[in-house]
Amino acid sequence: MTRTTLPVSQRVTDYPNNNTIFTVWKFKADMDIKPVFETLCGLVANLNHSFTIRVPAERASCVLGIGYEAWIKLALPQPVPKELKNFEPVAGAKHTAIATPGDLHFHLRSGDMSVCFDMLTAITEVLSRVSDCLEEVHGFRYWDGRSILGFVDGTENPIGNDRQHFAVVGDEDPAYKGGSYLFVQKYLHNMKGWTKLSTEEQEKVIGRYKISDIEMPDDIKPDNSHSALASLDDDNGNELKIVRDNMPFGNPGKNEVGTYFIAYANTFSTTHKMLERMFIGVPVGNYDRILDFSTAHTGSLFFVPSMDMLKGYSADATH
Image (cartoon, rainbow, N blue to C red):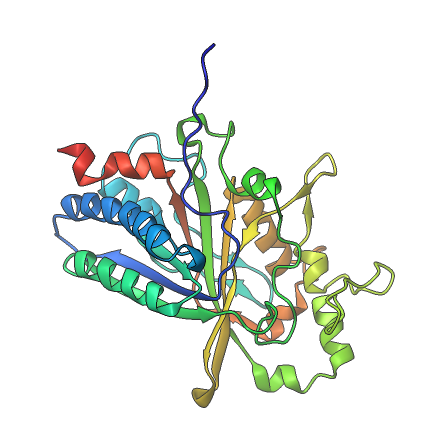
């Protein structure tokens, strides 16, 4: 009997951890990037393995995503993943999900920030010669998984086997099974405006009760609340989901606080439809009220190859 071996994914379905560093990198012009990328692929595999052995309780992981332009520059397999492209802005009448550049994205997680710090240091030593770091955001778990706005973030996340189902590419794109579409945005919150709202007004913005995290009944929940517009069904009425690993970040002394939105999905079209519902609205103009208090300052799409594919790109495999 022949056994089918499924590709091993990167750690996209791991549950949120206590500490995270997110970085976005862009290759410098006229640099020989291919050898560096090959070294980097081997490093990602080694970091995941080493820290799992050294500090298993910390649930450390390093996930590498690759942007469309980088995919082309690096001469990675063609055709490209079916839905990998440069993200284009999603513009509503009042708010816009802007698009910003990014060739590589690293998502570093651990219970101990020391591990995230050492992983990024190792990555930087390899990458900085040929690439500039455009974004570096240090996220942390806030109380029981709440955002700085005070509400639990990610309540609707899939759990168990559903995480694999919604986050990892399967038969949708057989050449890239085990991969995942990664979309990120860095939101900054208007805390002065937010804290002027009463708890009841805040709950109507989110569509959940603040303390209990229970979703409001449909006959009470406003149709422009976040929970109403961030939910999505397919044409057959089946719920579509993404795997979020959002993390709060901030510098309270500078009044700069926000949420790093990060979504893994087996198709980017699911995430894109959610963005359209939030920014354009349903019907058009009935946008997600949370956007009056949270502004997206970045927006980039990446593809996360399977770990098997990543190892195949590494210097050890190509020489």
